[in-house]
Length: 367
Ligand code: NAD
Ligand code: ZN
Image (cartoon, rainbow, N blue to C red; front, side, top):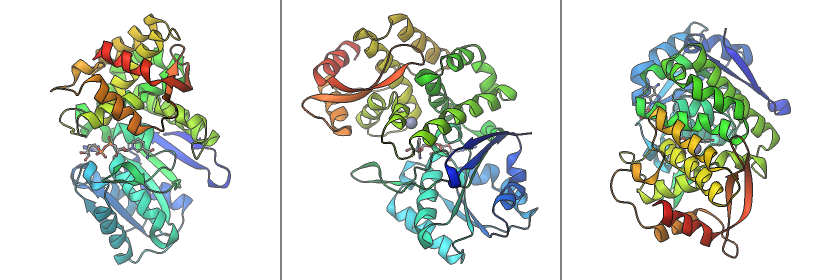
């Protein structure tokens, strides 16, 4: 039996199902909630090769013959050109407003497909079938969809909550290990934000999470509970939802500083280094103990994630240039920055007045 986590958004509430073998049951789970609908599946080439047949069979068992739209893999697919291709595919399949658009893939496919589902016929039913660990613990839950602009990441999109999320933990067995680790950084993030017991549990059980089995299901379910809580409290990120950006200010700066070159740094790796830096920075500001920073670093190192800037292959720009990436990423008011800082493991908070000069001094010391 899968674990069910509900995202409590009133009349738009929906279930996240987490468990092994859910692709084969997708038709039953979808038609139970959205009876009589027709469907399209949007996926990428990698995921299609590994898992599309299983999902298609799972849908056909319930009489759903989906149209299939396949995109190339990778971040560049979150573009206007590919959005147009998906929109055209949905219209060509003659789907109506009440029909369902299914995203089968990682965060790239989920973000792109959700945006298309949000604008075709002014909004269609949307179902997420996340296939990367990052998508299962983060991007498939919460309703943020969109694409990139040449002027920056995720600048164009809509909020569209899915009607259902099916996280089949078995599909993660075909995910490249580097992508699994990167998603693990976002999983550990929930422990570091406000679930200290979860972080301690991960320190003991992470190898079983990597191996699969009940610990993997439990870890993903706990992450989904954490994300669902925050989203239910603050759907449109006017407050608390910003805590989910722990590690992302430094992380985004490092991604930009490496030109979003995934051979050097993928998003979750930037988040891993960014979380370690956020803890180290909080300890430098005498907010958190250096032991907590060391504990975070040790765990990231143990699972094989990068945890310091020196772990990034190739040369990085100097501290001043890194700070300018940070200030570009943020609204800077009178030299003060908003950062997610922490008082210890599971005690993250939003700090609105971090002096840029402190950040610069810290970056110089840790470069
Ligand atoms: P991704 O979708 O590019 O997937 C990573 C790689 O793994 C791709 O090559 C993909 O083809 C492959 N893949 C996925 N599942 C697989 C499987 N089961 N077997 C084999 N290969 C598989 O990247 P991602 O890390 O899943 O997501 C990153 C994206 O998510 C970014 O664009 C980011 O902005 C977005 N994101 C969105 C939110 C949100 O709230 N909407 C949150 C976090 C991240
Ligand atoms: Zn992230």
